[in-house]
Amino acid sequence: MGGYVRREYPQWSWSFSRHQTLAGCPRRYYYNYYGSHNGWESTASAEAALAYRLKKLTNLYLVLGDALHKSAHQMVERVMEGRTLPDADVIEEEIRRHLRRVWKSSRDDGDLFVRRPNRVDMLQEFYYQMEVSDATLARINERITQVSRALVASTIWEELSRGGGTLVSAEQFDTFTIDETPVFAVPDLLYRTVDGTWRIVDWKTGEEVEDNRDQVALYALYVHNKHSVPAEKIEARLEYLSLQTFTEMRFTQDDLADVESRARESIETMRELLIDAAENIPKSKENFTLTEERGLCPWCNFYELCQKELERSVS
Image (cartoon, rainbow, N blue to C red; front, side):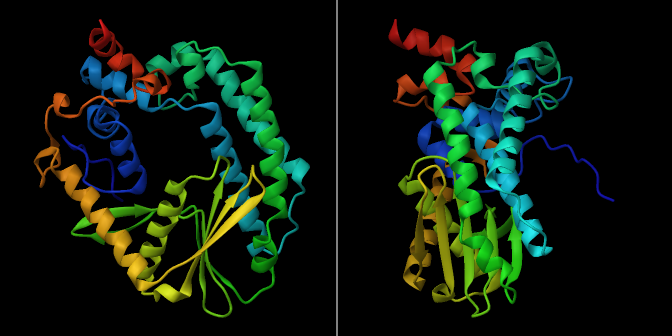
């Protein structure tokens, strides 16, 4: 049985979320993928320990999304086992219970989070003592109801329960390779229909943005490369649960070639920030610039690490 193997530097890989992080703020990218590495060790530097702790922060919207995806995964399991699906009220209460637990942990376990950040859920709003407005709470509460009802009403369940289809994966980490780089892909749901179509489903609790389409296009490339599926046999369905709408996408071979080309460009950009690509050793922190969108910084997990530098830049 394999155990933990300590690495001086993290393993090299690429993912769409990693690409988004670098595009949004190179400094955040540094702390998330390099500066926090080994920060869990008792001998870690103060900066690495703090970066690791801050990396563990979450927020109300992320917690809602996580709870929704757990409920969706449970529904997939129920459908495949031929069991009755819960109604929307049950899903809603499961999500609310999850949020209440994280809220209580954030309120009551701050000291424990500082000592053991990998064992305690901590909302960014509590850690940074940010006021959660009544309007925000009302929006979260409304969204919980919306996404619960939309999830249960999805036509996906009827198609899965008809029989004849094959579940390939649900919330399962997997990789494929581009230019010797492991690329992570985690479709919410992937199944094969009776007519041989491979369908990707991605549930969203937020707004419709172009990045979502780019993300599922990468999943289509994963299906094509990993399972040798022709592009025309792959479909994707983005379900915007809080909006009660969905978007369906089909792909050509040219579409997938474009996705792969853009991933290669992103990989090369990341490699330019390394002093040793083989060992994944990054350049110094100063080479990872702060975002120009400084107004977003107070809502970043790593704000505590950047605060003094940000204050100097405006003085």
